[in-house]
Amino acid sequence: MRAMLVAASLLATLSNPTWAAQVYKWVDAQGTTHFGAQPPQGQAAESINTLTAPAPAAPPAAPRAAEEDPQAAIDEKVRREVAEQASRRKDYCETMRTNLAQLQNNPRVRVKEGDEMRRIGEEERQARIAEARKLIAEECDVSPR
Image (cartoon, rainbow, N blue to C red; front, side):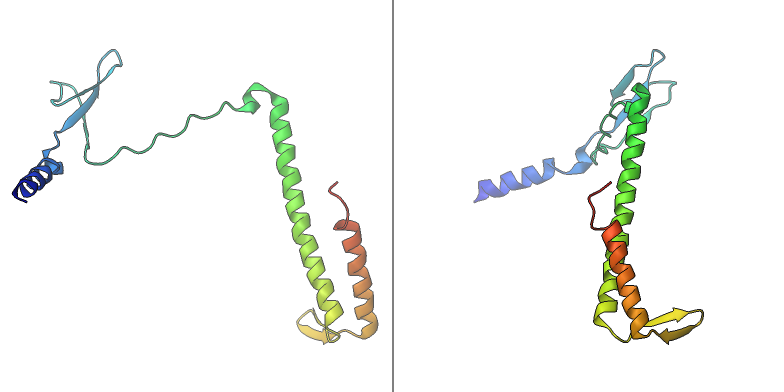
């Protein structure tokens, strides 16, 4: 038991971060980076904090296809535009289907005209249902263009 206490005390003493030595970093006239326990005489040196881990280095950037091939930049632009259009179409179709469900399931639909709300009649509701179905069939129930 006594040996374990001595070992634990010794380990705790040696692992104390205050025992870490100061490290300096500097670049010489030839552009070589140096590290050392003493800063150089007559030259600026940066003090390095050895108690914290350095920030992870950014991964090397992949070569830009646009710089190598102008067609790749155009292809990427078109891909982005197509993806944006698909996203907008998906949102539009979801809204149209929600509106259709509201029209079909609620015979007492109200619409806002200007600053006032009015209830639509059955004939207008059926016309709106037909128009919503037509728009969904044209814009949403087809394969991507």
